[in-house]
Each structure stands twice: as structure tokens, then as C-alpha cells.
Image (cartoon, rainbow, N blue to C red; front, side, top):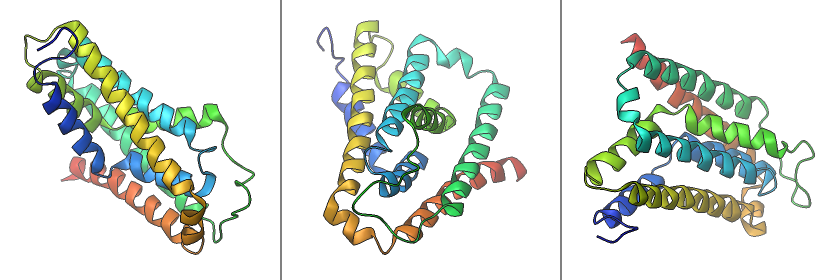
Length: 209
């Protein structure tokens, strides 16, 4: 164990990265936007998602374990997240394109503030993010971890989230990838929309059964 890194840092870093490999709402949202708008229309989305993850990490550090005792708060977050995912999914399905303009990005590319808010909302309205970071920061690091070590781990995880999302967007934005996807963009966007709606529907279903 060093001053900056706790003894469980490698276990935390590996667990966090493996979790990133499992597609979730953020991944499908990024995919839908990166195919249509490429890096220009998805960079802010990546920043927003990373910022949302960072806020949950901060809450885990300062005492989210106490806040999570308020079950009503978690219920509100879950329901809001479900509605948000359903709305995003409907937008992707409704505005799915039938062709991809390779020579330029779509003219109605969302502004940077819009991208930031969309990414932030996607990350913050996913209650699994809160529980995931809480378990990582408490169960893995243990009670002996220092504030500096927690901060180092938090900065590392936010940087990895941002780097991974930017890599996904960059790969999807490559010209040969775009050419391969140009005949399937409509189906991909609709599939992403359906998956996002599926996540939202699953959250609502848990409250009905």
C-alpha cells in the first residue's frame, strides 16, 4: 500500500474495467449518437457521462452509505431513470435515419451543453451506478483506506470511463466503420432505442411485480 494507492487498487481497477465491458444504458446511448453525429456530436456526451460517474463516486466518498438509507430517494431516482431511458429510447426510434452522410456530420448536431446534460442525466439517473461505486469504494477498499487514496481511485475511474467512451466514439467515427454501417444505421439506432426502452421498462416492471 502506498500513499496514493491502496493495496486493493488493482482489484478495484480490474473490477471497474470489467464492468465497463458490460453494455449498459450509457453504451447504447453513445452508440446511437456516435453513429449519427460522430465525435463532434458525442464528445460532450462522454464528458457528461464521466461527470455523472464522478458525482456518484464523490457521494460514495463523502457518505452515500448514509444517504442510501432513505429508500424513498432511491425509489424516486429509479423511477426518474426509467422514464428518462424510455424517453431517450423513443427519440432514437422516432428519429432513426435511413442513410448516413459520409461527407459531413448531420446538420442538426446537438450543442455541447445539450450533450453534456444528456450524458449527465444518463449517468445520474441510473441508480445502479450509485450502488456499484458504493460497493467498490467500501467493500473493496475497506475501512483503512485514506481520503487521498479514495480520491486517487475516484480520479482513476472517472478517467477510465471518459477514455473508454471516447474510444468507442472514435472507433465508430472511423470512415471505414461508417461505410460499413451506412446501410444499417436505421436498424442500429432503432435497436439502441429498443434496448434503452428495455432497461427503462425493466426498472418499472420491478415496481409492478
